Image (cartoon, rainbow, N blue to C red; front, side, top):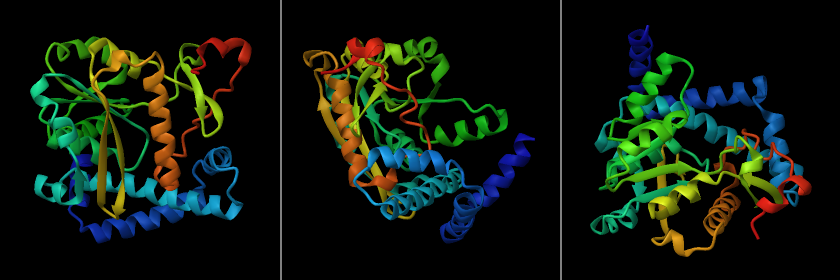
Length: 294
């Protein structure tokens, strides 16, 4: 069955980009106007993030978000067969920010948020970094699609590590210099074991793992902002946050990451994954006051 599904998607991936985007526009209309996929969640998130905007402005952001969301899903099909030459033509990245650190032998932890298109980011990093690139991912329940996703995600050399097995697998690569990519705005499994900090004016829990890992490994921290220049073309802006994470006060790394993500989203509101419930946990002062970053 895998070969049937893969063969179909591979043939589909050979379609011209313009045809792929015609399909994307059709799927957008179905998802937004007919199915209404998570529209209540999207609008509730936008109400929290942008209380100053009018209803029409938020609807415009939502529509643009759905276009970006569907484009991302459809572009994944093209990535199945895309060549390195074609990919390089469509992505610009200032990889020298990381590669300039290569002679030092220091590992790098690259952190970012749920921006579009994260699959382009993964391939761009593995294709352009001198250090081995480790990508952490959430496994897909369907084994056929799990295999297909792993195939194209690793086509330029990414070492894919499933999040549930990270602790058991990561040590295999930790003794040598590496680069590790993390999306740091995931909801924590336990809000009582997270940092709490304002995100768009509302107290929000953030996982401690990214900051803790950077400190434990003394890894240089780089943040990545990435966004669509035009359909099918992306720009990735990498910025060095610090090469000395342990010299920063406790919690300062997480605070810097939160500010970075919020600033990026404010610049390009439709470039963020609004369909996930970023504010699913309510802040309780009696329970979480000691976890609040000052």
